[in-house]
Length: 199
Ligand code: GLN
Image (cartoon, rainbow, N blue to C red):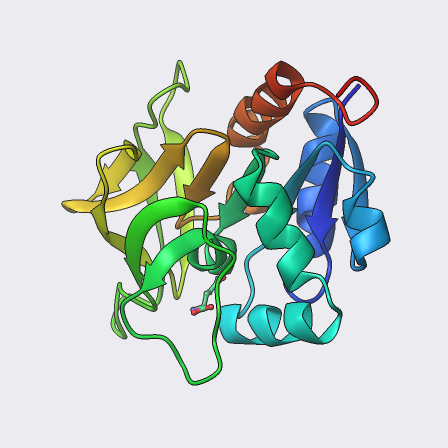
């Protein structure tokens, strides 16, 4: 059984821990470099991306995170977590850094004021059956992607789910619904990559 961490600095950590456990992984919170070293994959939750970025630097976990993501550890970011995985932010706040890992440019709070939170049914590549109910909360969208980045879903002509190698990101929050198929897809990615013990 893969052991998957949830970066537990700020944001909706608990919901991801529950979703991962439902999707047949062992899930645990990760705050320190030593904890990061013991997981086979990592989820970066939704929350506030500047806060997560600053806390990651403060806790000394930003550099180890970059090292592991760039050496192929499977990682999944939702919303603020998607922003953390972007190689570039269109409108970063001062002091805001990212882990990177996905060749894309994201626009923070992109869906705008009138539409800060909404739900939409989405066709997500790699997820069979009914559409996925996407919960968007002050969500980013992906402004553009590089040649290696696969677009998995769009909403209103904007990219809202992507994958590049072992890195997955969604603008929306599958952990807030009872449908854990996106987490299932991520757990499969972690399983395919192998566990820390077997590496
Ligand atoms: N707007 C937030 C940010 O820029 C993301 C919101 C979320 O994660 N639900 O970090």
